[in-house]
Length: 290
Image 1 (tube, helix red, strand yellow):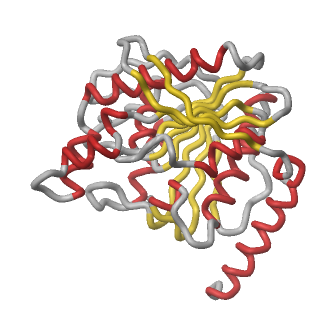
Image 2: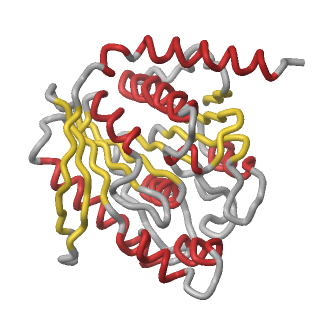
Image 3: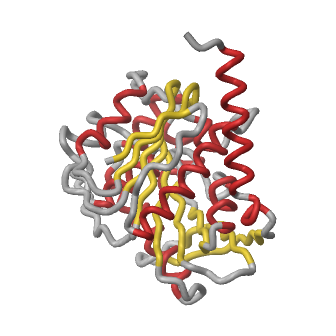
């Protein structure tokens, strides 16, 4: 049996190895800018944009969780900018902070979140936000790669866009080159059983052993999309001890952030080359591929 001290030591060593591997990109200066997007229905959408001074290889759209805003997920946005992407974090107003406050009025936080993540029009609005961000970025980046990342409710919309069946009546276009879903949902409020079998694009899913879902079901339900997907550059990362909020950038040691970005780096390299072979294991997490 491994001791807790041994686990922490291996995790620390793993983080040092990963951070050393990313030294080249970590020295790059990332500029952040607040902008306003206009989506197809005329609604103005606040957004944060992150980019470095080098060549732009593509766009990365980051979709925040329910009750979040464009100001969050800085660690992901900065990392993707250092990887050569123009990173855009749109603020999803119909499922953002103000919407959560209104949804939970007179009820609990869980009641408010449940109302937001089961609101079909909110997902339609999110897809419009994502399209507006992508169109804005198209004239500012010569690279053609496109990656959609999402956490929690953002992970749900990423899977819908990738082609997952859902109870919201949303039909995706599967137009991104790769998808990254942090804290994805299994069968339940949003997705029916076997919702993900049609997804053919490369997908990275990540969860943690403390990442229980909204109904307090085990984190293992978040592995169901991976089990249902057909083989072909599909990855599932499971971070030991990581909670739901750790993937959103909330954590004292930032261990989850480091393991997440290292895995994203390897996944995107594999997806681009067409050789999605699992990298050497990182201490503190399990990686499954197919």
